[in-house]
Image 1 (cartoon, rainbow, N blue to C red):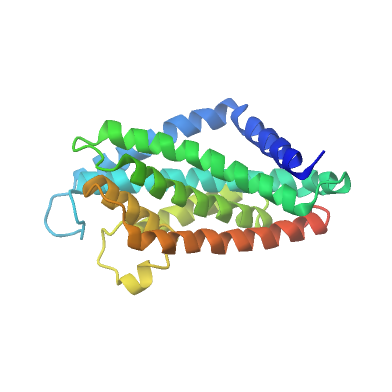
Image 2 (image 1 turned 60 degrees about the horizontal axis):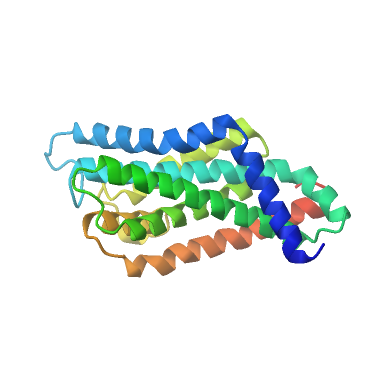
Length: 248
């Protein structure tokens, strides 16, 4: 079996394993819609007395923030489960002839594929729930996909440092929630600080796509830099895990 077929086989096995679980599919469909609705309704209840520093309406800002949170958190948990399931299985596969680069490649492609699905569901939810519509749906999809990739790769890292499904999931959800506070633009936090929040640039891409109908080109490269940084970190911890026989 050549390298491309081995990677394809790994991606297919990981993706089928994820979608075969009814709970995973239910979360994939329900969490983005619930998150977008809850964030939007919750923020819309606050009176406009200058408490928040939102550029648009609080309801729109809330729905955007909910979509980014749901995409990042779901993809992060997926990355976590990918790493936990890979710890021993991929070590055995490496003994059967699979090279580490092929194994890590299949995991990354799986994270990308499922992140695209989550982002599509989140984008569709925004289109359905926002009364003002989404100005540039494809740009919003791109921003959400970047958020999913960043947290999917972060999930791989957390899965190595904390290989427990419940504890690791809680860590990722809390990180995504706090990250979203910085990224939302609701509070007057200096940009020199918020630019380092992983979700800040994807959030701004989604916001401009929804509100202005444009692609926030100035935020694309910084978002990709976060993807690249977490990808390098993920490769390092993944290779270490496989080399150590499934133990970090």
